Image (cartoon, rainbow, N blue to C red; front, side):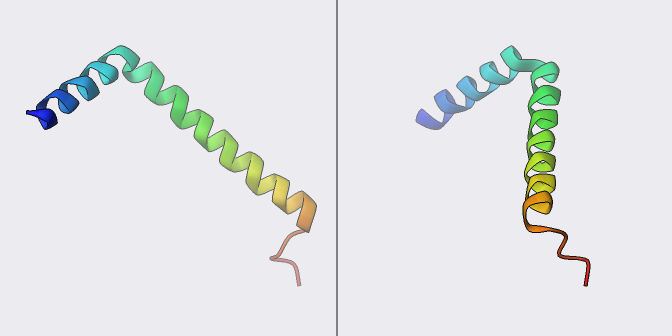
Length: 50
C-alpha cells in the first residue's frame, strides 16, 4: 500500500514538472559538470599535457 502511494506521488511530480523540467534540469546538470571540469583544468592545469 505504501509503495502504491509513493508511486502515485512520483507520477504526480513528473506530470507537474513535465518534459520542460526534464530538459531544464538535464541542461543545468551538464552546465555544472562543464563548470567543474574547466574550472579544475584552469586551476590545476591540464593533466593530459606532459
